[in-house]
Image (cartoon, rainbow, N blue to C red; front, side):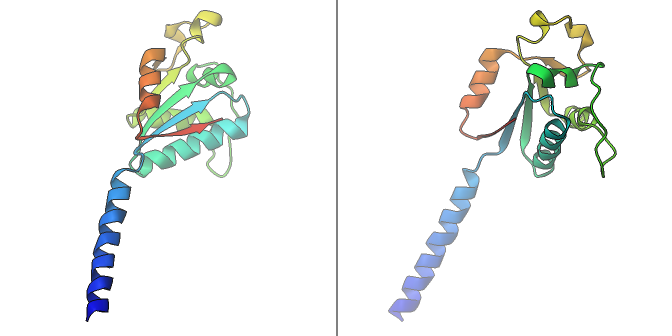
Length: 143
C-alpha cells in the first residue's frame, strides 16, 4: 500500500513538474537572418512560419544581404515544392502579425529609404531589439 501511495505521489509531482516546465518554455521566436543564400533564406522563413503556426510570437530581423528581402528589389529563387520564394513566406509572417524589421544600419548605408521597404516592415530600433533578446521567453534562430 505504501508503494502505491509513493508511486501516486511521484506521478502527481511528475505531472505538476511537467506542466510547470511547459509553462516556462519559450513562446517567442527571434529570427535573425543575414544570409544572401536562397536556400538559407527560404528555410529560415519556412521555420519561422512553422513557429507561428505552433503559436509562437515571431520577430524577424533582416541584416546584410538578407535585408533586400524587405524591398521590391528582392530577386529570390522560387523553391519547390512550395512554388514560392522567401519573400512571399516573409510577407505571410507580416500579414499574420509577425514583427519584421531591417537592421538599423541597413537604410543609412545603402541607397534604400524607408519608402523602399515593403508594407509592414520597418527599420529596427536597437534598444527595443536588445530588450526583446533579453526576454527569457525568447528562443533564437540565426542564419
